[in-house]
Length: 177
Image 1 (tube, helix red, strand yellow):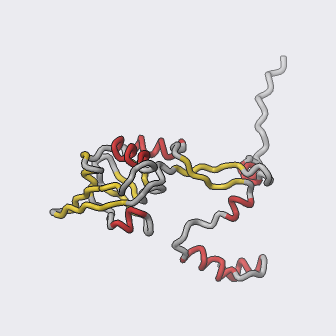
Image 2: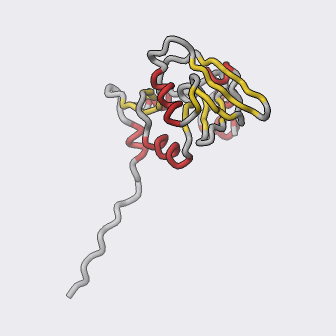
Image 3: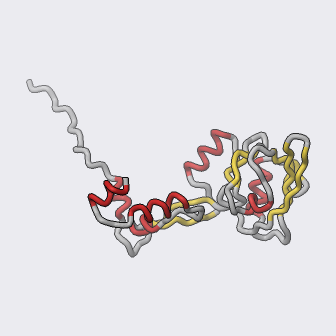
């Protein structure tokens, strides 16, 4: 692949690809920003996230606490270097309590939302096989959902790329008398 890319444009393609493939940091966003958009977070779910959570009956706390949890409280996945991962939350464990209350999706979302004004860490209780684990998450940023925001001072190349290049179909002509 590197050879083929260098045939098109000479560059350090091996270094470029290795940096992106081996990186454990956030995704490189230069291309997105160069196309006139930026990634922002706020407390409103985007349409895709809302649809997935409704379909799966889950809570996507990946951009806040750092994990996904299903209706039954089972943790589907944990993102490295997030508050949940640092506290010892592991995939497959079952969330049974949040701040002294029995787990529910609504309860977890409310506690994440209210973390902005909470004085102390959030207490989560997990079970895994015969073990019970209580973890403290020192998180205070509230609900966080990703959205794309237009950079007004830049050309909007992303919208241009999304436009179809296919010719418009014509309406069938009416039969001639």
